[in-house]
Length: 624
Image (cartoon, rainbow, N blue to C red; front, side, top):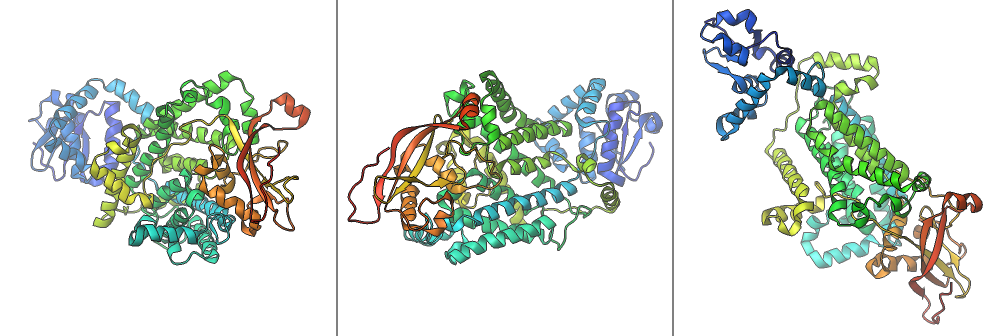
């Protein structure tokens, strides 16, 4: 037997399937393992029967030990510091060895078939994926989302929760303090405990936008990501109903994971040797799976007949919160088109997510499907930065090699040179960070199970941990439009000085004037307009904020009035105010061409009774 100094893996040099995988393993193990075809070195190892070389790979160690089949593969990779969990599982998990060897023998007996499968799923050459440029690009796009979120909110914050806003922060925090005492700092984590002044609210949004620019240009990215996450969490906590949307907690979860892949240096660029941790990449993929799959699952689990009978899209485009002009025209398409579209949507949301865990080329198919669906939703509905953030998240279904076509050649050549240098892999080593990652994985499992088992059926420890960390939104549950709303109702607010002549307050984006086209407003979110849609779904008693909104109009609050498009009382607030409710629906194309009306509407009655700030006023008629 020939003496060797490092492990030697002997394979069938005439097997195309073997050559593909051996080439891949060579890149993983480097100079820690040598590889030779048995046609060349087989006669140097007479203790190995010739038929064994044909049946499976053979690993020969410097100590003279010989391993074959699946065990040989696992020990080869583990000895080079790769995938050590495989050999551990082979040795200690009951049944793992038997299953591994059985699967290896099946593949070995059908190499021609699996060669074609490998070519189809991975290509001619298996690659060791890297995510340097994915990380570099994603962090900048995430910075753009943060910038949009802070700027959008900064234009509305005082009108929503300022001192003269609809739901003042001071009142909210005082109520929290009275009810929760010292626990309030954990249950409601916000910097507003330091100050709840309007200036402080503006400063949070201002510094959030500035730090977002730092992330976009790649300067001190990790500290900036940490700070913007704290700032946005602070706003979500004090925003009450106005920041209770799924995209707000979605951004917090995405932003929290980003802190683990951002470089701790002054300037970041795509030629840096900093890797995105493979574990974090897979956590992002798991997040994308939870979000997409949950969005489809909740629709069916809700029992809503419109989803189950494939009729939901026949009403969705006109009943969604803020329709778009494109949504108007899509609504006019035949019923069969909407039913077919819904089947495709369910396929993308319920089947395609499982491709996230498939081989490389199949993940590309998943990425394309998700991007296509989100782009269509973006065009037909105003869902703020939600769709963009989901599209950006799909980057983690790709890798650097898949992006090279879109990167300038000069930059790619610089990147290639850097990659050829000695690799330095960023590893999660501290106990604290490792524990945090373990917590995130645990919560992911809980939230995947939650739609199917319900919160009450979770094990007590799972309920406790979920509740304990819920205030920080590091992992969340998702699922939009579990129940399709139909028909569409709109609240119209009117003011009057005599109780007889009523003038309408027009909102900037929500339906009102029937001749005004539905706007394209995303990625900005007019949060008052959105809440008006929710308020119309039931009575005002279920939406206490509405009872605070109308008195602000009677007081003529400048911050609140800035949230509206048109104030019919520019000189002084009206004496009376009321709210009526209408049923709205899209007109057909013929009506629109004849009347220029995008909407048709019918009065349903009074939504909120007439009120006045003057106690001497008598009750007035609401009229029509």
